[in-house]
Image (cartoon, rainbow, N blue to C red):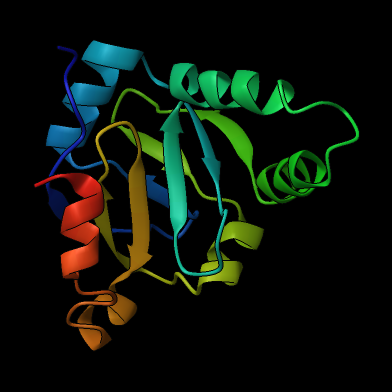
Length: 146
């Protein structure tokens, strides 16, 4: 089984708008996927950081929906309006565009959450304010088959 992005870490955004990827995430990204990333905001709550090979798999699945499919158009418009392809530098820094930071209200401190094949980047204030933004329910566990 391939390495997974799991756990969480706190990080800061520098004055140039760069996120320094925490070392555990950086190691897994580079060893498993390489340093090319696609960063987007599919919701207004947090950013998603996808290793480029994972993002390309998503694009392939979305392409199968057909050119005129309104869900495809909406998804691609949103993903690309707030998205950009980016490479981590040798120190693990990656630029978050101003439009991305403004949308999800990221200023300096962030919390990164590993989601197996991608990373969520949350404003630290929002994570502190929402002890658990969405507690798991019995229905969730049934769906997940735990």
